[in-house]
Length: 327
Image (cartoon, rainbow, N blue to C red; front, side, top):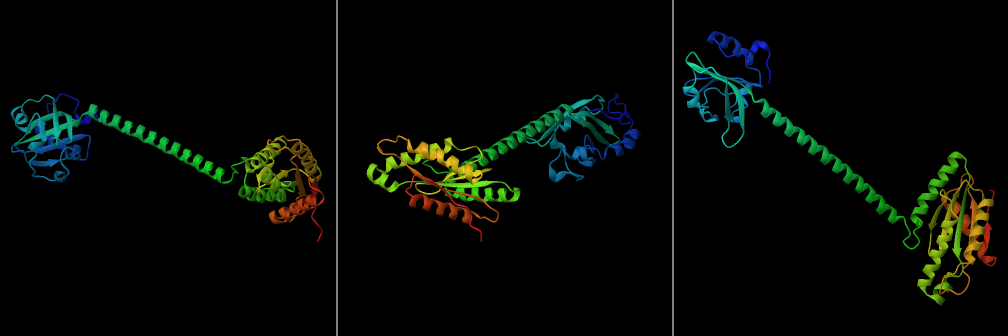
C-alpha cells in the first residue's frame, strides 16, 4: 500500500514525539493503517480501526485491555527491548491459532508509552483479494451450474409433458394434445380470418381385424396407417390419435375441397398397405369439414363425426365432407 506524502510512512522513520501526537489523529479513522498507543505493561491506551481488526471481537474498541498475547512475532517483550530501533519491522499480530495478520511498520517509544504504527501487509491483502476472486469464480461457476441444471430441468419437464401428450403406439399426439391443438387452431383461424379444415380418419371393421388376426396385428395396422398420415402431412398440419382406431388431422390454410383431395390420396395408399399377417385390404373412412366463423372445437368435431357416420353408412372406404348448416 502507498500512502499520501503527509503520512510520512514511506519515509525513514525519524519521528519526534510531538509530531507523532499530531499525526496520530490522522490515523484514527483508517482501517488500512494500524495505530495503537500502548503502555509498558501492554495495556491499550488508544487504537484506531485498523488496529481493532487485529484483536478478538470482544476487545475491539476497548481501552485498558492487555494486548501482549496478540503480538506473536516478534512478541511484545522483544518489541520493548528493541523499541529504540527506529527501523521498519515486520510483525505478525492477531489471535493465536486463529486469524493473524502480517504488517510492516514501527514500534517506537512515545514519552512513557509505545506507539505501534504499521500498514496492513499488501501481499496479504493481495492474497485475500485473490481468494475473493476465486470465490467470485466459484460463485459464477455455481451460478452457471444452477442455470444449466434449471435448463435441464425445463427440458425434462417438457419431455414429460410431451410424453403425456403423445400416443405411445404411433408417436402422434393423443386426444389431450388434440384438444389443446384444435383450440389454438380455431383461435388463430378466427382471429386472422384464415382457412382451417379438419379431417377424421377411422379404420373400417377394426374389431374384425383384432378378432381375426390378433391385437398385435391390429397395432401394426394402426401404426401403418399413422405412417401414411405422417407421409401426407405438412409441417403445419397436426395429427392426433383421438381414439382406438381413430385419427384427427388439423389442416390450417386449407379449404374443404383440398382437404378432401388429400384424404382421397391417403385412402388409396392405405388400401394398398401390406401388414402381415393381415391378408385382406385395410380400409379407412374419412369425415371432412371446414371451420367457419363462430365454430368451436365441439361443433367441428361433431360435424366431422357426422360426416364419418355418412361415410360408414355409404359403404366405408370413402371420403365424406360436411359443411356447417345455416341456422
